[in-house]
Length: 127
Image (cartoon, rainbow, N blue to C red; front, side):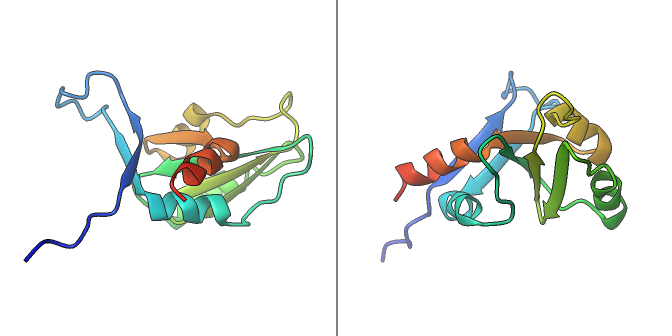
């Protein structure tokens, strides 16, 4: 009897020197089903001059960390935390405080960020 098929996965980031056992090396893995779900989710709607970024985390931030991030919402940035993902609506690139390093610092956790357009392209490849 054959094993059930394993769903394809998508690796979002592998830091340099993956063979090293250093804790700095992080792997962010999502199944294609998860990537498609993120691409289809209507958590944040961007207008013409706005961009949406999704920050991938390895674990859900605790309530205190979520509040720390959400307290930084402004006219330039809107942050929403959903499970292991942070959604950023960047309204004004020049005034935005958003960066991957910024998220890692606030949440005290490794992260990797992708533009929603990139996530949609990945999902479209696997229809």
